Amino acid sequence: MPRIILRQRPQTAQYFTEDLDGVDLDMMQIPAGTFVMGSPETEEDRDDDEGPQHMVRVSEFCLGRYPITQAQWRVVAGWEQVEQTLEPEPSNFKGEDLLPVEQVSWLDAKEFCARLNQRTKGKNYRFPSEAEWEYACRATTKMPPNPPVGDGGVIQIWNQKYHKPFSFGKTLTSEIANYRANYTYGRGIEGEYRQKTTPVGSFPANDFGLSDMHGNVGEWCEDDWHGDYKNAPTDGSVWLDETDDEDTPKVIRGGDWYSNPRYCRSACRINYSRVFRDFDIGFRVACSFPGIP
Image (cartoon, rainbow, N blue to C red):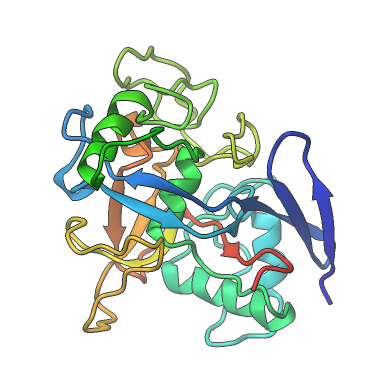
């Protein structure tokens, strides 16, 4: 049975480690906070589906420190089936246990979470909601002090003082993320295009202690795809299609090793069928922190 090991990372979020039969799964505690979801119309290379911007209050939760690795996938693929079988070695890029698993569909990854929940009780392993993912990617709880009355004034000040396309700033470099770095964003410079995934944790973590939120592999979210944020939830919850149609695509966030930097922006969102697999799509898991209902 997996065990829980609690640790404290100095000056960063608290986290716990789930022991998957000898392979660690680090889960970072993400603090509650309010942020502005989406991108302003002035952001370079933005798409219309990244708006309208809106304020979202996110409750405390946990998110994987890294995307799920091939070693973690291999272990869980060997556990008792819940709904469907899992291929233990699905990835295109092989050779290192710490490479992120890829070529897994949303349904494959959903089975992974179900098997985790079958072995571990009470934490509810799952995909993050799209709002949780973007909040964790931006890794900030800053809000304008003494904001004007109304959300519009808050959003305006947020965009002026705090908004940035990436958690690290106005651009990316190949020293801090794995992406198609022979393309640039903003005033960025060309760098090394590695043309493959890299071991998780190869690049600096953001202020929430999360690595690879930009690039490496795209990450499935729980939400159904919607073409914009009109009527989107403001509490960080999952946004599902009212028809509950299994043909509705699912959201992917974060960009990947194959993507131009514009697709690695915090606000960028794409979608694929829940059965789609590719060599640049993986996932990370979310859950409740031990002791949090």
